[in-house]
Image (cartoon, rainbow, N blue to C red; front, side, top):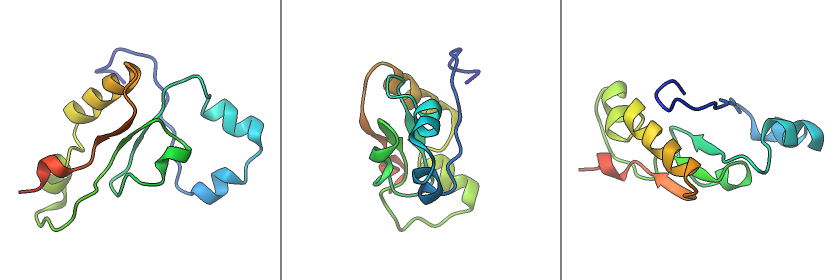
Amino acid sequence: AEKLDKKVRVVSMPSCEVFRAQPDSYKSELLPADVPKMSVEAACTSGWGEFADAFVGIDVFGASAPGGTCLDKFGFNVDNVTSCAERCLSGERGVLSNGSQGKH
């Protein structure tokens, strides 16, 4: 948020099932339809279309390295997530980063 110099909201969703069970008014207040939304998940990007417009995730497998190294190589770093957020705010939709940049 600081690097973007924009007003953003970070929402943690540890359980999609619990979120789905909430009243529509709560879900709409938390994730307004007219506001761009981007998921950041250290797992596959599929399934997030129900809640977000753009996705950062990992759709590849088979890497082996210390956790921090893998996360960085797969795009879970400030520069990549910020770049994807800027693209989302500019209207890009769908998978913006899927970890393939870290696959060698």
